[in-house]
Amino acid sequence: MNRSLSAAKAAKKDEFYTQYVDIQKEVEAYLEFDPHTYRGKVVYCNCDDPFESNFFKYFAANFNKLGLKKLITTSYDGSPIAGQGTLFPEYYEGNGKRQKPKALAVILDQVKDEDGDGAANVTDVELFLKRNKAARIALKGNERYPGGDFRSPECVAFLKQADIIVTNPPFSHFREYVAQLVENGKKFLIIGPKNAITYKEIFPLIKDTKLWLGTGFSNGNAFFSIPADSGRKFADGVYDDSTGLVKFRNVGWFTNLDHGRRHQELPLMTAADNLRFSRHKEIKGRKGYERYDNFDAIEVPFTDAIPSDYDEAMGVPITFLDKYNPEQFEILGITTSTFGGSCKKYPKQIQVGTGGKRSEVTKLNDAPAMKVDAPPTGKTYYIVDGKFFVLSYHRVLIRHRRPAKGEKK
Ligand SMILES: C[S@@+](CC[C@H](N)C(=O)[O-])C[C@H]1O[C@@H](n2cnc3c(N)ncnc32)[C@H](O)[C@@H]1O
Picture 1: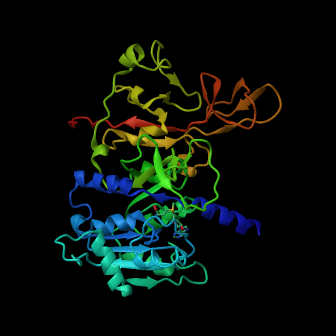
Picture 2 (picture 1 turned 90 degrees about the vertical axis):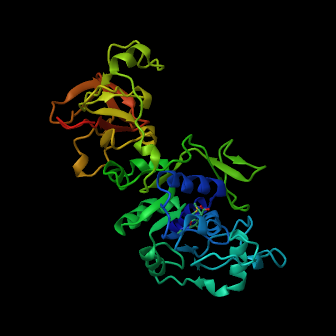
């Protein structure tokens, strides 16, 4: 019972809906880099109630402009509708007590000028859906997964015929969701929690440039609508009554579609100039950058303080990934202990034991154990100059990519 209660709680947390304008901004950012990103492609939105989702609405309305071959949208059995203006007229009708739709797939092969007004747009999609009820297919699921579950055989079959998956999936299944896309070799553009960057299933993909951050939400403010009856409680300033929108700060786009920003060089100063002129008091006026004791790298607490002329490993904040250009930098690892064997040589989180004022910490890379002042127990630290620093922020370990000898940059 506990398990189903927490599953229900997790499912409720998954219910927030992306705004049309955010989808438009992100999808179209890729066109600046390659105008044919979506041309001739099958786009699949697999966590999208077509009655509700702006992903469906956006791609249906821009079907011809983007040059899509097909748009497939599937909804999850049990997804509540927030009722913000659907493209399915029958759901407006009646006494407002609409039936919760069961899981279904909506497939569009083309968007024609149904109303003869000279343009093929979202009104035509509405008309088409009214005239062609057959464009909707009920999804049954199987004994393991309910209809519309992204793991159900019907949805996997749609996934296999799709070229690009675009959606905001349930965050509670993010790891499994991404694994499925990668296993199937699909292109994708999806919304996810920014802290997924540190997941042991996700970070290796970032490190190997199989997944990177998209262009949107870069200031960290993303707005979503939630079902009116969600009953969810939010911290002050998160939910705005007047708009019905929640503001999440830690949400971003994850993709493997190329975009222009990841080819832009991050402008940087030399180490000497940083130490003289940096706008950060943690850097300006110091003799040099701090070094980790348990890993051979310097600590760079701000992305704009990365020295242009340091050739070895550097620990930088995760927000660096918003500016990451794989031609400029290589990613070596991330500070965490939950990593797989291949990353053991990177700094580990250090759990300090109880008892005693001093604690023994084993240095990595076979260096001898060293004595350090013990901080309060139960937290995770990295060490700089024999002192513990609370690892409330992870560090991504990077190195400048330098041209091989004799090769021009
Ligand atoms: C964060 S919401 C986003 C909805 C929509 N994609 C959007 O951006 O407006 C995630 C959606 O995934 C649906 N969902 C939850 N579990 C799912 C599953 N296992 N398979 C497919 N969809 C699921 C939820 O019902 C919810 O509507």
